[in-house]
Length: 240
Image (cartoon, rainbow, N blue to C red; front, side, top):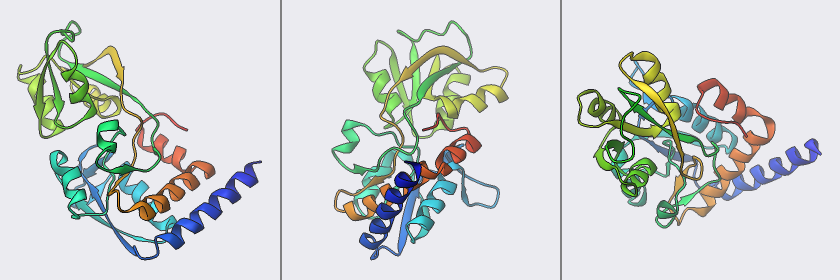
């Protein structure tokens, strides 16, 4: 059965390569500010889980990656306007985003969002909660009894907690964990939220052929275990 699955994936990948033959170079749009998913290393280059994943996906689809960074709050508009060909930036699948762009199948399963605070008794129900603008966490907080304060970058949300502007920040748990481990003034709270439909690549709705080629590459990585190994290496979430 395993051989049959792998053979089917190989056929799908070959078909995807043929479909996307006109896209020999793919401009990969990312934020470069959300470790360990994506960040800028000391050499000034895009690094992290999604850099390694994107390069491997391009290799399997027989395309060349070119990496482009873009601020998070305009990352979807700049995809739609053609500044790059895909988003690979820790973006969760949501119904609202799916009305504007198309998503591949998820490459990370849905994972919890967590709260980071300076006190274990931070008021999550009616206090002030920080979140990055245009994230699933910001949308979640906006529909609770808490007061939402939004910031353009994830670093600013952490700073808001430390300087007293916010009682806590809500973000991906895997982003917050190393911050809590490295700062004795901050702690992860027990309460978690399950929001979003997993992490995926985003494409313009007109680029279904390119989306399908990357879908096939993602599936091939799931089938041969490469994706799970990469998820474990970077500690970005649960495995398939």
